[in-house]
Image (cartoon, rainbow, N blue to C red; front, top):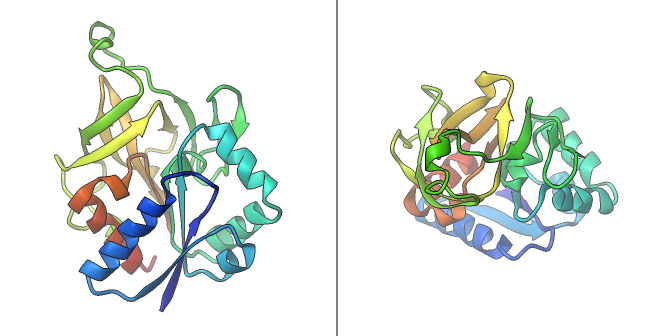
Length: 219
């Protein structure tokens, strides 16, 4: 039975993430062992790692650095051992090289990009496209195929809650966008890792399908 480690950094939405994984695995008939944990030993042996994130980029990065050995075990398991990794919201943003929320903060450098505040390009509609982006927005895919996106399609609505987003430098690593007065990166990925700016656990059937695909994914 696969063990999925959902990284526990003390935020309030972790239980909803775990429940979404439990429901998806139950609905699709998959047996998995879901652990919400900050225990380095459990993370080091997990078959898959999920890093949800809420709050500010520097706060999440600071928490990672405070847990002795956490970054090292993430780097080893994800980069060197190539186990599947899913970053959600700020967990996705940490995959970038650097973030500019409040201060300049180094990311994991797993994705070639930077995290900047969302500024709708259409100046005349900035009163409409207010920041933070809160609520449902449509996906538009930049790739014809990725196993974690199987069954998803252009026009699917997912739930966002964010003021910052990754600007990718390598367009091959941008898998989907959404429009919010301009293009915003919604999904990134390369090799064995994928990240969603939106919250799959809040995105109903579309989110549950993505979670199922991630559980089954063998990169």
